[in-house]
Amino acid sequence: MKISAHAVGRMVGTWREGPGPAHQRLSDRLRLLILDGRLCLGAALPGERDLATALGTSRTTVGAAYRTLVDHGYLATRERARATVRLPHEDAPAGRRGDGADAGGDSEGIDLSFAAPPAPSEILHAAFATALERLPLHFERHGYDRYGTAELREAVAGWYGRRGLPTSPDHVMITNGAQNAIGLLARTLLSPRDKVLIDHPTYPHAIRAFTDARARLLPVALGPSGWDVPQLLAAARSAQLAYLIPDFHNPTGMYMPASVRRSLRPACPTIIDETLADLGPEAADPDPAVDPAAQPFAATHSTAISVGSVSKSIWGGLRIGWIRAVPVLLERVAGARPATDLGTPVVEQLATAVLLDGGQTRRPEALLHLRTQQDALLGALAEHLPEVHAPRAAGGVTLWARFPEPVGSRLAAIAPDHGVTIAAGPRFGVGGAFERHVRLPYTLPPARLTEAVRRLAAAHRALTAGATGIHTPAAVA
Ligand SMILES: Cc1ncc(COP(=O)(O)O)c(C=O)c1O
Image (cartoon, rainbow, N blue to C red; front, side):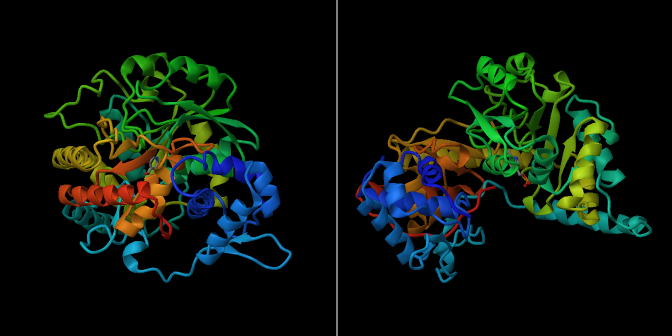
């Protein structure tokens, strides 16, 4: 696939900002786009002259940036052909791979690119033991079910009921995580060139699901004072779909107050992502940023399409999520589903039903742990990176940290050399926005978080002193 110079120009955004020589900033930015998958493997980049013209820079700068990428294995070149995107061979030391396997080791990298807590092992073990006992009841059937098992659909309906939103199981479809739900909805509801309203910043894999459906994005800023209702309503009038995360938004951790929920009536179909809804403050330790009067969005907007998951409240490895919507819409989704998957594993569904029925998605001790971990992360930032502004999150698992300078991408690029992997701000937006931001999850124990921030501060010092390095991919959850 050939990528035009203008498309690359849009993707690199504000590449000129920041310290160091221009060719290095450009190669760092291109490398990050490759690692993020925004420049996909095999894509043919524009020629040096065309890209230089589109970026308003010299051909020497583009040539030097391309050469750096070739030297580090991110571009393949052939004579008289465009350079194509590739990845270096997997020969980097394990601690620098950022593959999520190394979150705990001392000499190895600390992975802050994933915002997901570890599994509650005993609770999970017990739920699977019960699930295995119940499994034989399903053996007589073929095991393919696009809507999910009756047990789990009832349990999800019960979860909504306890949150103040009476729900019938026939309004629930079980999916392979919330991401699968978002992807299925995108494919069902969108046509090429449709517009999708998103919070800005927002969850990056949702952005990906919408752009893969060839939709255009309509970002509406989610600023420090929260959701801007007039802007959202205006944008919704020209959108075919909206996607919002009102409950402990990823990446900012913000919570939409009841008054905003009531007045926000988008004119287009609206997906409400409640993946983090259970990760609010514990009753014994309430947070003033969490409005106790707020109900699930669909309680006041009967047409809202809700998406949920146990990935953050229990464990990402379960891969269980769901859609709550009117049955006619679920039928359309079920019709689109076989193109990508034919249902959800039964044992995981049975175990999740046990966990939901037992109220295990809101465990007071887990919520207090998150609180302590957030405190530790904020404390470490205040000590080691005092220039960073990181507002306390009302809930969820992440802080949205802002540096005084636009260093997000470059910091993410060199941080693994200092033993920590992070997700840069631009992953959470469009058009190269949020270059001053990074997302920092607080899902590790306090001592690891403190060490991670210490390493990040070292990376930041190296960056401001002009040093850079090379790293290998980091995903985002
Ligand atoms: C807001 C949001 N939606 C969806 C997902 C994907 O969840 P799942 O692991 O259930 O696919 C995540 C994971 O980070 C998320 O933060």
